[in-house]
Each structure stands twice: as structure tokens, then as C-alpha cells.
Image 1: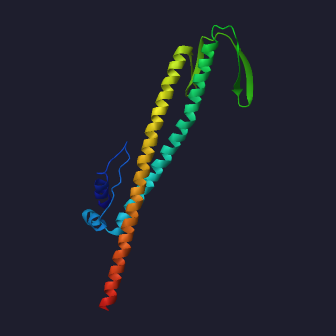
Image 2 (image 1 turned 60 degrees about the horizontal axis):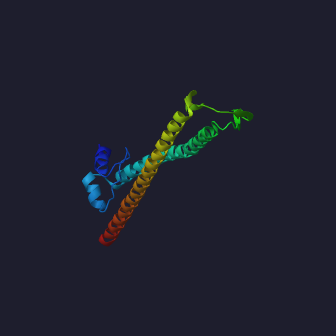
Length: 191
């Protein structure tokens, strides 16, 4: 029940693509009293939220690595298709080495290639005209770059939330230490 009220309070901050925003806590005592929680429960919730952010960050970083690896491959394919189109009609053969299997290469002499075969994934390859292949690859490149930009923005947002959560954890912990010292000083005066 207590964690539900915390989630409701903290998700009132900005949210980006399913990543809940962290709430910056200026007054720890007000924060705790509004939620009706003790320090340990609040710290436990904040630590859990921090772990969730770290998990999401790992997933986003993996997606970023995949996209960063995919973009040069698409650009290389676009260059190859462009080279094939440039050589078309010149009567000049294009000599290319290609990988047949891991570690096994073959040499090909290409003259006036009207089409290319592209791997679409899931063991699917389709033949496209050079113009269609260029259009498809350019569209894929534009989508990959746009996705990478969104992913970078998501990572920046996430890092901000991690920082806010870490600061909040430190503030709650330091407030608790301060309150304990006050109680100890009061108890020492009374005895």
C-alpha cells in the first residue's frame, strides 16, 4: 500500500517513453509526511527505482550499440549499390570479393547488374532493382539515424532521472542522520 502512494507521487514528474520521471525532494520531512512513510521505506523505494533506471539504461545502451553497428552496414550497402549503378552501362566489370561462409571468400566479376539481393533478416533475402534497393536502404538509414537520436535523448533523460534519484537518496539519508543526531543530543541533555 505504501509503495503505491510513492509511485503515484513520483510519477507526477515528467515521463518520457515509459520511463517515469524522478521527483526532486527539496524538503525531506514534508516528502516523508505526505507519503506517510518512514526513512527506511522511502530509501528502499528510492533504491528500487534506481535499480529500475539502471536496468532500463542497460537495455537502452544495448539498443544504441546495435544501431551504431547497423548504420555503417547500411551505409556500406548503399555505397555498393551506388557503385553498381555507376558501373552500369560502362562495359567495365566490377570485381568484388565476397564472403561465402565464415573465412571462405570468392571473387566475382559483375557486369551491368540490374538488381541486387538484400538480406531482410530472419533468413529472408529479396531481389530488388538497384533503384528500389537504394530507396529501401536510404529509408532504413534514415529510420536508424532517427531511432538513434531518440535513443540518445532517452538515455540523457534517464541519466538525469538517475542523478535526481541519487541526490534524493543522499538528501533523505543525510536528513535521517541529522535527525538522529538531534535526538541523541536531546537525549544527552535530558539525562
